[in-house]
Image (cartoon, rainbow, N blue to C red; front, side, top):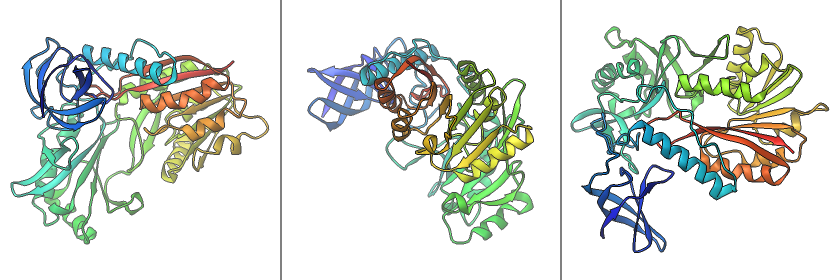
Length: 426
């Protein structure tokens, strides 16, 4: 079924929405003010989802995306919108999500990114061997079709510079059909890292190919066959290094570990979290989902003690190493799930502040545990407004006041929004 729709607004997920006979119609790659022709692909009682067929009248908000595959590639949703417009809609969607789902209102002003292009320091490129040769890029939305790219405009150009060599080295190898993904990363010092995912049976043959003199990359190189435990080092340094705090702490993280993709905004996020924590040097702090110590170690310099919890053991090992290298001794790390940690580790003194930085799924089980404890303040770092709104509800209903919830743009050209939320016990 074909429909003509005037797009009225944007929603979480990046799609535009208009109404036909009172029914909401969601259409990707559109802008408020567009009049579009679309094909309905899912028709429900109260809403419909559609694919964009043609823009009949362009919104004055539109711009020409710099990426030739914008709209076809699933990596970005909003390249056709000027950055100021993206920011305004992120503010609106963030605020409306908290109001609608939790009955609370977040800040109206987003912490904007200083650069809307070239900010990604980590990126996962999908790979496929086709009849036309080896392609590397990103999945088309809702498919496993790899959209080939020469360069990605939101990715650090020093990582884009590796793509021609990846095409040549992997594409010309007998293993090209067995490499579905290449993870690229760069640290503050410019060191680059490549991690190839391998699904063949001769991983050592692939490693020998990568070690041929003509195939050497100007980057550290790793290969993984399945789970992270299968990681093998081909050559180069193990860690990438980022800097946070003032004066700067240098933190390393290994292949398979986590660091924010926007290093500049991560530095700002850490600074804002430290300011919000208002520590005097007497507090005990629990950092859940601590990773390699991105928040734990800057906090430890202004707290009495910090306890970090992360269920990925290699990240805990790296956090411990980062503490030693930065001469920080008032922090202890545990490799265990976040659920149950607050009760198990609080001891007789408890915790004055809990920091949460969960994955996109949120931390609902952890939050239900926190309301049973006498914790004065909670700082919640979220990358998903809907799961944040869900997790805030039990806290608000069990004696916490929302001091503020501030969106932070770590992901220009996409609908994704990071945020920092402060709650205080009444």
